[in-house]
Image 1: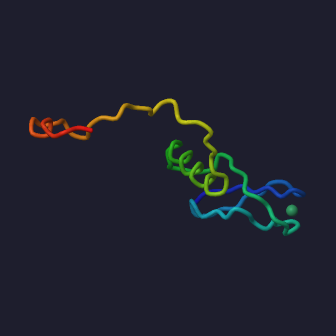
Image 2 (image 1 turned 90 degrees about the horizontal axis):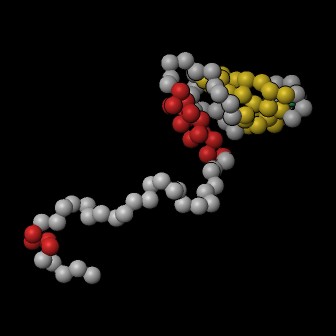
Length: 96
Ligand SMILES: [Zn+2]
């Protein structure tokens, strides 16, 4: 189980306990029953490594607020390489 936090514009934040990954985007405020949006903050979890918590939070957040990429990642740019080392037979084949 995890504790999810929601914020009502009028009444502030409140928390609900739900199974991990099942938090809806909005909840009814317990005070005014208006729409309260989910707040993404460090959840109160036990026995789950921090890196997994961060990855799950990011995954849930991107369902509603996808990350916008404006440029290619600077790391990860690698030269293309042959999938397998060329055998002498394959080397004789014509190349483009
Ligand atoms: Zn409210």
